[in-house]
Length: 275
Image (cartoon, rainbow, N blue to C red; front, side):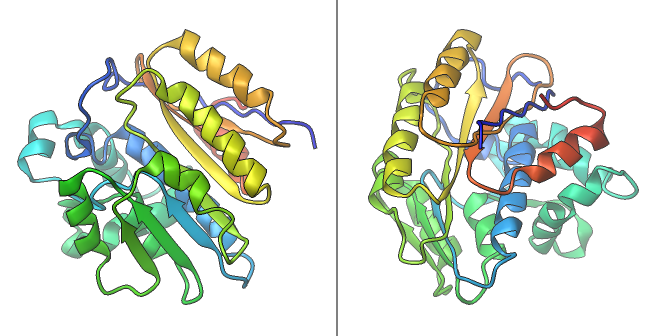
């Protein structure tokens, strides 16, 4: 199969510069909606077979975010992300595709009032079956403690205080031989774009049948074009790309493995063009 490149264009302005990243300020923003919608569809695809799978979340964060907390209140980014989708969730054609994602958000918000937002570990946990497993990695001490609390009591899930870049290759292939690796770094360093392609290269060599989802911010088109060139040189049969823009810049997501077909449906529902 030849490489497949899919783009869905949308755009935003919350990733303008490198910084000491704290996701509590950005939880539930348009980039999270984009990333987590794709993540849910990939996990649903893995669930189509009864065989167990494993999710490896390399930069998991704290797992759970208070939209009424001081950080979220200060940035207000979630109001242009999950809040807009939440309010428009009834009747929109494209919402059929993201309804499973919205159901996971709703599970954290009893009574229908949007107050909490699940990070990728809780989203993944919400779609695990009894036979599936989750490894969630977080190195920052405060977030790592919160992550351990969020996953406590679930025997299918394990929180590890380890470097996510190392974990991406160290924990593949998993015993189940099926699953997904989500690589969602904070991009505090410009070199992270190069690390992204390098980690995919090493991990895919060890586990070529795995699904890999790589998130990146759209800050510098030149850096993204260089990333694209490196990814196209990898011996990976199919690497779709989805970029969401809401006024420059925005987030992007690439992944390898199966489960990308739904994105074509999304592009048609939203009136955009996949290429």
